[in-house]
Image 1 (spheres, helix red, strand yellow):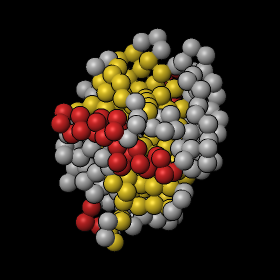
Image 2 (spheres, rainbow, N blue to C red):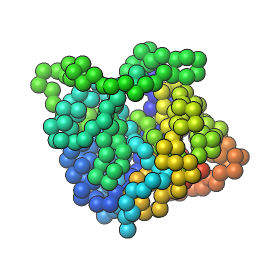
Image 3 (cartoon, rainbow, N blue to C red):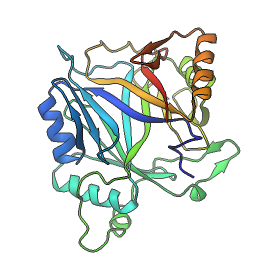
Length: 283
């Protein structure tokens, strides 16, 4: 099952604000190994296959540093193979990058920040048949990552050569100011289903029984303010629908729930109750 192609509804692209484009590009292309697809003065589209962009960088006119607001917790880059995760782990360690790591039972993951403090997860999924479901809930944990076992997945002499083709945007985790309104927006509005939760603290939502395409938490505080428009962090994200009918149905549900739905460059746009901008497109 591919959870990032039709019929799945999924996050296909994340756009973040950065304070220094040169420094950001040194990090994303020089260290992580993305390639540049398109570049202008204030915007850069990054790619892993030289065809589509899964991540873009924007430099606001007067960047504001990250504060305790709603917005980006982390975006998550999904690698094709376990050996890719092993290779990037060794690469980042050699470059003295501060890393967090977890075994989530459904996946194995690294955590790091870019120069602006934007959170990044780099992960690989276990096969869906290895996941454990209890009814409509999938079991996820935050166990220590077994680095020794991970490194054993490397082929002899295999090293990190940059983001491999087949790398995609796996999911997005957001700070929100209020759990019930956020969950309502993403489920009753956008059409996802809750598949895991820390009651009152965080919820993990997906389509087609993925472990999560979107997660939300209140770890920056209930009532956390919206970030300033020029703040580093999340600028917008793209939610891809399998077809026009499902996109239009989601837009109507949002309007029926009282959310504003607009159009921007031909795409359908809305904001969750915490100010996170979602651009709705079709695959």
